Image (cartoon, rainbow, N blue to C red; front, side, top):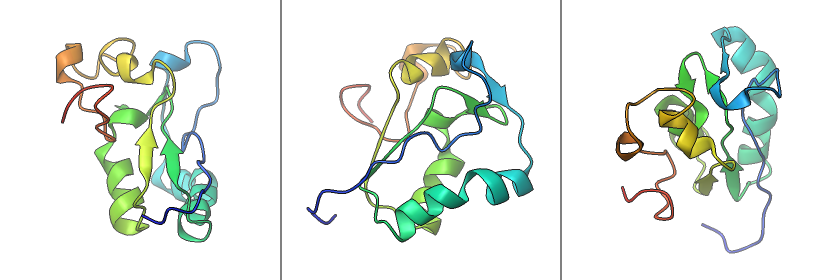
Amino acid sequence: MDSTPGSSPRHPRCLQVEANRGGYNDIVTAYDLADAYLPAFRRAVTKGKAAGIMCSYNAINGVPTCASQPLNSLLRDTWGFDGYITSDSGSIADISGAHHYVKTAEQVKPIHCLPIFLPC
């Protein structure tokens, strides 16, 4: 990764609410995701060479963004992102808490695998 300071776009998400955002699940079509929500993030990664990305509290189509392997694959494999992925405050705990995506905190394996959350 280049050592030049870069941007860190926040929340590649479809969040439409502020209340209960930790447990909110956005149902979004593949077309809307590709056409309306992700283009700015794609440009930030591919053209702007973003240094990092912050995942959000909500889930998209049943998968919390901070546990989304499809989002990780899109960023890293498709767009060539080699930066860091960090969570928004509390969004890692929401994977097992508000979202009930996994049963226990020990089962949470965030896509960024920072040691301050859980070892990978």
